[in-house]
Length: 479
Image (cartoon, rainbow, N blue to C red; front, side, top):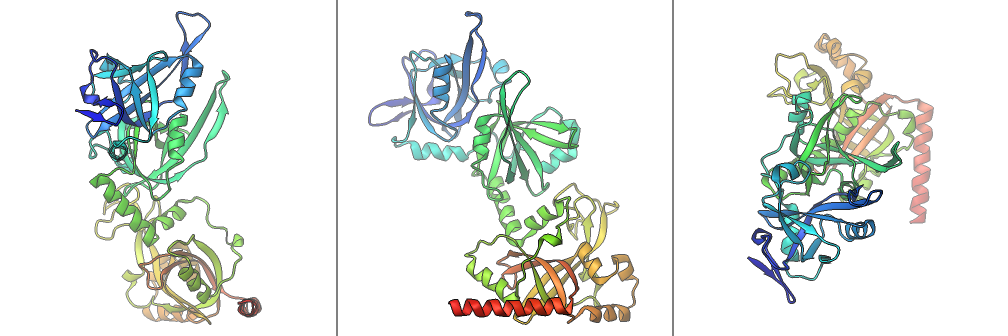
């Protein structure tokens, strides 16, 4: 098969062989290494420069390309294109590859050949005007390995150090992308490092480390909590300093961004549901070792103002931290205890599945293990003079502090004492610290987590209410 344009015919990568005279090929760049240098054996004291990349022209075929030459030529060629660009190569040398030796450091390809570029005879151009571009660019979303051949992050963590040094495939979502860090080694070589945090249904935070400029630039294009990647041939290691498993991008690695596979689509659905339900943000917060410092929360809101923010957000709203001077208007703690007490994972403190008694964000927890603990998980209504926010979360340690008792102590109370406790808190003017996120599936469109709830100082509450009324009047006159 050959691809055609208005000016030139391109040989399909699958049809290449060493006897072809002056072949031209076209493909999309799916992998690329940084420029490196080695001592030149023929010219003592000088260095030769090299870099390699991988191009693809069909769902089933891709090939490695190597270039050697002067520093000026190699650096100029390397800087002329990136992963994701479509390139044409004129007159490469088609050479048989030594699979066992070469695939130790280069991506494994279906071709039994490799392409070599010569500064004097080969030409590489970035292509943007050929009819094949759209079809070629769609290949960027097809993994180079079997889409079902990957380890979940939970599997890697569960297997632990038995996977030390193994080369594996990983399918995961991007939680966060760190800033690149630059350094100089003891032998005066410049280096860089960037760490990406991955997650999936089984593990909430897993480090992917990038040491080369190409993968770091690619990572900077990923959108946290929206991007999914299929990383083929990453190296798995145990980080003794942090006491955790990590993945590292190496010269063999090819990363497919937002792969179009059934497995990736399932992960996309998980991301969407987690973000919409607020479970992802909750989990990120729960994993933080440092609790939220309430002293940093100073903005006072009314219920009405929060609802207005929701209506004006156009579907996008960053978490809001603030204070409401109001009261708990619904607190159903004196009926069925099973409705307000749930099991949490003792490792990550996330709620475990009630049926299977397993944590969806870290290792499985068997029903007979002691890896869970009982925790409050209460839905309350929060009301002030402007309205009510329904089904707000009062849970875990915050609930214990608000109720003034632990789960164990609460379960020992008689029904009458539970009712008495309820009425100690209901309709009492309180200073309520909160975090609110947009949640379309929630009754009010907002999901509130109570961070603290204590009886309000009457003077402080009155001054705050008076200040809000004055501000509202000023805004009304300005309008």
